[in-house]
Amino acid sequence: MPESAQTSVIGKPQPRIDGPFKVSGTAMYASDFHFPDLLYAVPIEATIANGKIQKLDAAAAERMPGVRAIFHRANIGKIFRSVMGKGMEGICIERRPPFEDDVIRYYGQYVALAVADTFELAKAAADAVRVTYSKEKPNVSPDLKAEDDPQVVATTYGPEHRLQSERGNPDAAFASAPVKLDQTYVTPSETHNPIELQGTTAIWDGQMLTLYEESQAIFNMRGVLAQMFGLPKESVRVITKFVGSGFGSKLWPWTHCCRKRTFASLPSLSARASAASFGHGRIVRSRRLRRAS
Image 1 (cartoon, one colour):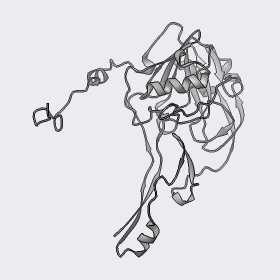
Image 2 (cartoon, one colour):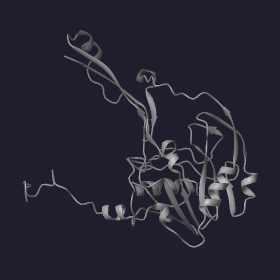
Image 3 (cartoon, one colour):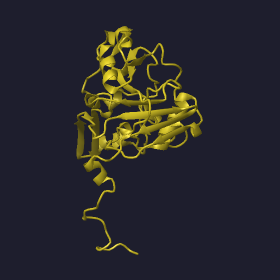
Image 4 (cartoon, one colour):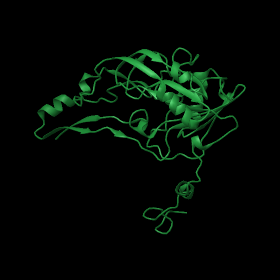
């Protein structure tokens, strides 16, 4: 049936299927699922933006009652790097596995993970971990110049040529044009603050890993995690009942700190403050627009 003013959805209010569940608080997000013998994980985040870890002291945290483990580079176990596949397969924001080295690349980077019997105990243990850094000056210059980039740049989707389309001689045409427009537009950084914080509930059952995730791309996440843990895809299941908004921050996988065969059930939940650092966002962007006629 051809679309008409009566059948078109444009300009008319449309009910959201998930709307009543979200506004009533009955929507089950990734960290809302509970299972027997559940343990809780809270990350320890870097407090510098650039540098290296000199010492990580978890002794006091490990002695606290109810604390099961403090995971860090020395004891996290083997986690592999994922690789891009064909098309849109295997996309990952951060290829570096959790705690792969002592290099700090950004403020809020996960450097350790506290696991305990309750969320409160895990948070207290995370606060008790002491990390000493050697600091280097971070690059926070707002002056962005595309000409400074190499011809091939690293992106979320793998290496890409900076110049993706070229035709004719634009420089000569611009130079000879009587009317020119040459303007650079800069947009500031933007952080994502969704209803639902980044969280994961992981269930290990033998060789089967089930994750309750806030993912906007569950099949891609399954493939990435299968590679990182060295499992067949059939042994990884990702479940997302609802996504409490994401703005893109829940589209591709970030660091997942779940150690194989260690715990039966493990939810990991980030803090609201982390939305401004680890929770992804839109970085400062600079665009130069040149037009001529």
